Amino acid sequence: MSSDTNHEEEGDLPRSIGRPARRALAAAGHTRLTQLTLVSEAELLRLHGVGPRAIRLLREALAAQGLAFAQRDSR
Image (cartoon, rainbow, N blue to C red; front, side):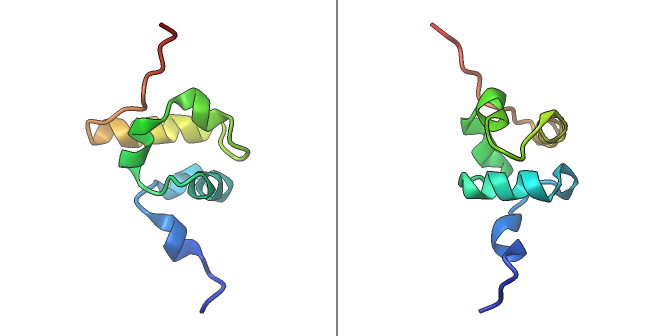
């Protein structure tokens, strides 16, 4: 086995979000854009390594596929 885990974590997330964000997302079980439709921006911002820039880039990538982050309303 290789110590290179990039292939396992890669999925279809944009590389432009940066390694810390990709690692944080993968550790939380998010390696595909479609998985991000189940979580809100606020939830992802709580992950160490995911900041406003990563959220913006992910939002743009989701929108390009007609997708969006989950909306968490306080009802």
